[in-house]
Image (cartoon, rainbow, N blue to C red; front, top):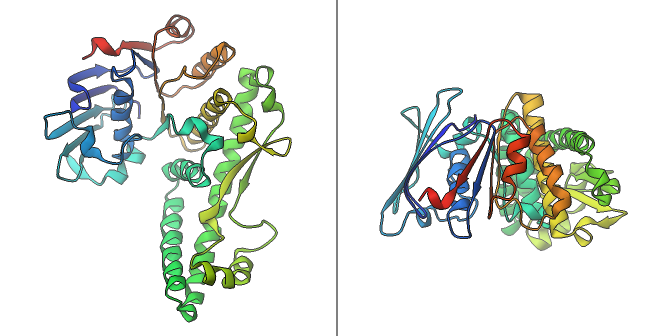
Length: 358
């Protein structure tokens, strides 16, 4: 769902704003504090009902107001999403004049955000990388969501039993944990393998290996959350003593991760921040390619502060990525130095000077 029109009222620093967006590339530039990230944050809310910057939605309401309102229009499907947040009430989401739960937004307006946290993808926690994988997999597969909720429900019960030392009750929950855990793991592995395949395709397409030597040696693997030469049943049975002692389930799909190594060394110990940022953009684009090719879903790609920590070597590669992606892309930068070259290389390019929007 490309976002065609956006209306903002009393959100962050914006009192009232209406924008028409390109179905291709949209570029917001302006000085620090001008509201670039706030605009991307507003767009991301249409995908999740959440902010990628703050857990407190009331903090997004413009000073001296008690409510913010967002309205987005999909010119392709004709869908209209309205989001309202009153300072002391839950968020209210309306799709085509019908109220819906905010967790339904992900399928209506799928979106992949790349921001200050996701820029350090290789350096982030396993929990963070696992959530990014899960979020993309959940967009395309109802079975994935069903297994995810069932597994974590069983995990919560098992951990409660461990904390209360009711070990006689644990085996019934082990059975559920194994059933849903194995299904969840295979669905994660399948999406990971498809992402890795598209990651390699993009690398070759844009010639990134000729610019970044580390890409010749990087090894990317899926860790299921326990040793691969053991079954989940074996792991749960073999670690029951340690689980009892620690009062939690130490191994399982809730510990899965995506591992990055360069010559058998953890990539986070080798990559610069700029290299990590570029890698994160490539990986996110690969996930989007999976959604587009395999499931006919076209997520919007949001990139906040695209230029920071990237040197000139990367510029042509970024243009090639933007040319390759047929999805809507919305990104920000502190200045417009990218604009001339990008505008000449891309169709459906639109630029916004944020200070002039306020």
